[in-house]
Image (cartoon, rainbow, N blue to C red; front, side):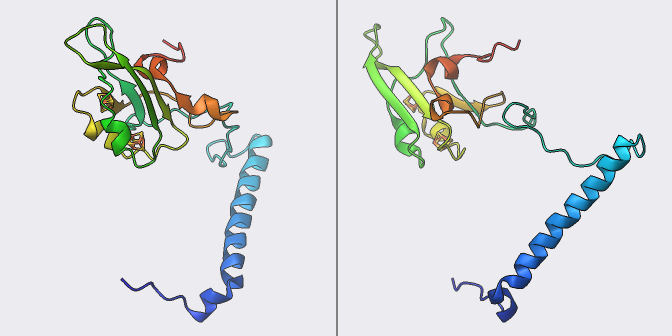
Length: 170
Ligand code: SF4
Ligand code: SF4
């Protein structure tokens, strides 16, 4: 497929940069106008856009979001995962790290000693869920952090992935 060609004006870049700056300036002016009215006690129904202080302040995820990874459990609470590595193999972002250990039940070969997902690399494709032969990993609703103050805070381990309420909010 041939690449779409840029026009001469687009190749100059300056007109496009000017358009971008004009758009930003317009938003700034409109927001400032509404903020000023609000601070004077006027136009309370017209809200200016507000920048939230992320990550200290977080908007709740939409109810339809299915992006929280979970490791499913048996009725006795043990992990269903058999550490077959299918999900890690299918993951295009290479962000699943599994260390297997022997399962105490001789009928089951393995279970994960460690099961980590580096969510900062995840592209939320769902391939891990598709690849799992045990229905042991799912993506569904629920809260998790997509930004943190250090990288380690974005690696979700087995305990987090098996916990229904990892932030203790219920
Ligand atoms: S959703 Fe995709 S990128 Fe994220 S862990 Fe699963 S397979 Fe990897
Ligand atoms: S979550 Fe599923 S695919 Fe991934 S290692 Fe466990 S059993 Fe295998």
